[in-house]
Picture (cartoon, rainbow, N blue to C red):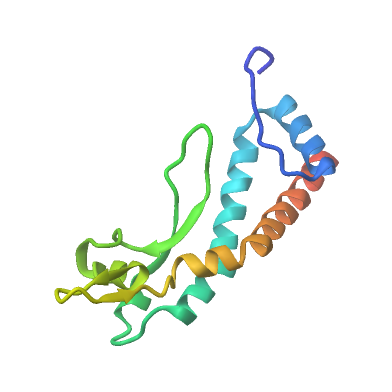
Length: 147
């Protein structure tokens, strides 16, 4: 992998950044990407999903049963996981979840405001998620460099 260039997003943690650069130089980016995907999935599952479940509008329990953690579409610049429904908002059997999330205008000109049950838990947990991901990747990098 000597001729292949690799860019890595910095975490802000100098110790971890140095370890990731060394791992990337020795082994390439695949193992780092794999660990980051696992770390973000775990954070979405263990931190965000329970908060979303506690705030999801409950009537029949159908929305709760359709809540999933999925990988976002990968690209060269991003990877991660999201908490959402099996189908996109405003589509399929869970289409009405979008109206709960974002709100809507009524026919008579009134407004029903959304309650942001998907976005609020994510934004409120941003620091916790970041700490979880950085700590998990740090442990992984420490074990890997120890070999």
